Image 1: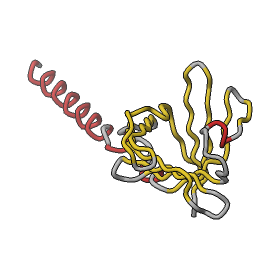
Image 2: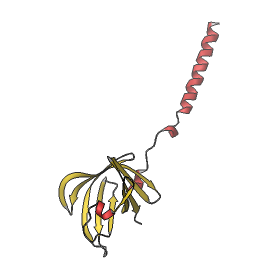
Image 3: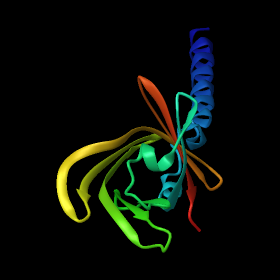
Image 4: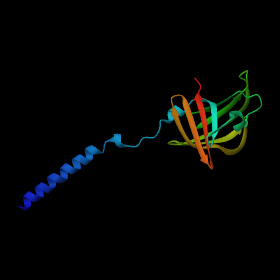
Amino acid sequence: MNTKLTNLFLTLLLGTMLLLAVGCDSDDDIVGPDTSELFAIWSHTAVTINGADENVADFFDCSPGTVDLHSTFNENSTFDVVELDASNDTLYTESGTLTINGTHLIVTATSANGISITPRVNFDGTWVISGNILTLTAVDGDTVIITLTEVI
C-alpha cells in the first residue's frame, strides 16, 4: 500500500510540475513600450498646465520670430531642439541626453547654440505615443502636458 501511495504522489507531483512548466510561457513576461517609436523628429504643437492651454513659444521661452519648434530624439540617447523662423532658418539650438526607463523619460540639456552649458533637466515625466502624436506628461505640483506631432 505504501508503494501505491508513493507512486500516486509522484504522479501527481510530476503532473503539477508539468502544468506549471507549460503555464510559464514567455508570453507572460511584462514588455515595456516600443521605445523605437520615440526616435523621430517631433514638432511641438500644444502645452497645457493643469488643463489650461499655454502658448507653446511662451512656455518654451522661444526666440523672437520662432514659428516652429522641433525636437529630435535619437537612438543614441541624445536629443536636439531647433527653433525655426518663417523662412525655416534656425534661430536657436539645444542638445543633450535622453534617459529612458520604460515610459519614464528624462531630457537633460547640455548644450545651447553649440556651447556647453551646466546640465539642466528640461523634462522629467512620462511619455506615450498614439499614432503620430507624442504626449509628454510631467507632474511636479502642476500637471504639464506637452503634445508633439511627428514630422514626416
